[in-house]
Amino acid sequence: MSVRDAAIRDSSTRDASTRQLPLDLPPVENRTRADFLVGPANEPALALIDRWPDWPARAVAITGPAGAGKSHLAALFAEASGAPVLPAAQLTRETVPAVLAAGALVLEDLGEGGLDEAALFHLLNLVGEQLAHLLVTSRHLPAALAETVATRDLASRLRAMPAVRLGAPDDALLAAVAVKLFADRQITPDEALIGYLMARVERSYAAIGTLIAELDREALARKRPLTRALAAELLRKQTLSGPDDDGDDSRDVDERD
Image (tube, rainbow, N blue to C red; front, side, top):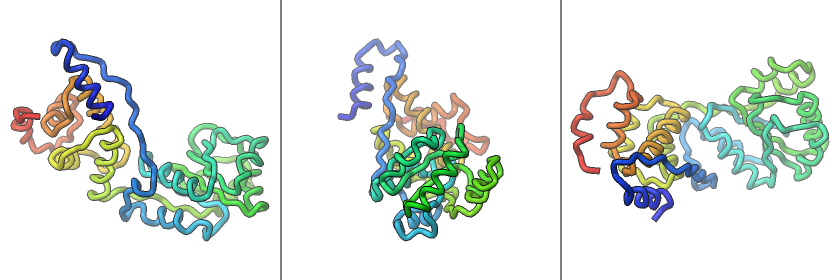
């Protein structure tokens, strides 16, 4: 029995009229190669990771929206290369030699939060001097980030940095991502639940992630399994379903979970 199921079972033994606060159980994100879901939107980025060390440049970037898989790809590169993973906002000039000691580095979320421009410029120089490899992840293309920095030479380096952008998911990939996000929360969804959500969710990684987190939290609070019937009820109550809802959910809430 999973921790989540145990929490539902234990809370169900209490007074059923009391709405319990859900336990704060963060999802366990699995970032192995087997857990990476491949589709047309991310095949070029995965191919870049697989090509290492035969990259088009010593420093490359993978960009895309939140939830698209940048950190998962970065974890695959880190495992293959032995690279440490460092948030870009934590990079300082003094620590550059140490973080590049392994000959490779993942610099995550460039453009989110503060940036020490001198440190980044020093890092890019050292990557070239030491024949090391740098993987940058960001929501923005390096050329766009170049427009936000004051250091002219750094802007030039960013404009020249090769980048692969993660595209929007197709229906098959988005459904597979939903199944993985449920699995990260120790939930095994049935096809009816996945199909129901796919017909109503915005076509983005962030939207499906937010929706599943909210549904899981509410299901735990109600001490009920997360089924299609409960999802229909919660979506109506929270007005999370779009205006194109087909209106056939009246039968869902009457079904047994």
